[in-house]
Length: 399
Figure 1 (spheres, rainbow, N blue to C red):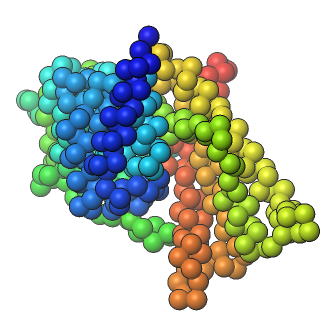
Figure 2: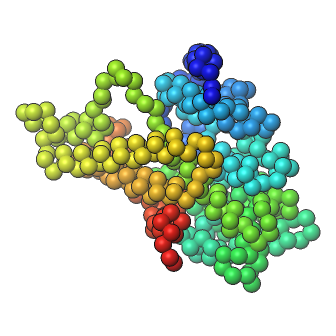
Figure 3: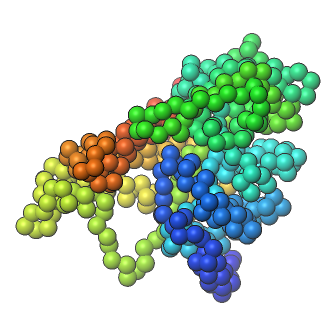
């Protein structure tokens, strides 16, 4: 049990340190992952990361022997609350911290931990994911990128697609086929490789929202070291699935609780609706049908938030995430998509404008958000994939 006095002291020290060291430019509350690639390349973001790194707070709960903060659950919760209080963005973000780092900590060798984890924590290593291929998206086990073991290295040839942030990454974790004659889910290995080599070519893909967070990645005799095979040769499917659980768990975060005396704020949907549709004599949204749509969206989001908070609290001592994270991925992405569509719809024609000096930045962003978030039920594992996982791994239904 943690001493409350010690926690109070830690809170005061943490609050003072954050106020002094977190740049104002990094107090944004939250950002969409597509925007994060640019934001985390700014001078303010790098300054924030480097300062937090000195305390291990880029990875506050990771072991101190690799450069992490080593915080227990109670201290990490205090840090999260104090960061939320000033709307501080995480000091570092990305697939290194959310996906490959936890996987190496759990399933890698000690040598692999020593070699990769400190660079993830410091920000020296920026990672991307090599899973999907043009002919193997939702059917991930159908991947065809080949890796031939020659001596102490793998020679890789093939193509990956939808590799988020590949143009910024210097490392990739990838699933590759090392035994083409094996059954579909076998003969696959999990390797990590440097992106800074002649055999790797990256081509960004421009999306309908105007951004280019995703890329095509081509391998032409690219090299991955034999020592960078995570897990056993031809047994990478289990490693790859475990990593996906960490990815889905990254979206399962409890929000800070409201203070007892904090007044409720008008939610973003009601605020937008009243701005564009007006209010009736009782101060309600003027359109009855849209009022119902707002109510349904807010209730669903609140239910997800409460459920997430409960599950996070219940699982603090249970260790790594499980298959139930697919529930949060499916429900959360669906609500994100419906929320963006609703915000655009509430604005009427003002929520459908791409470029114009006659419209506000929020109105233009509404259009981009609506288009951008149409993809959230696809990337990270489609809703259909999540439903299969829930049916098999959570409910125990037969194939």
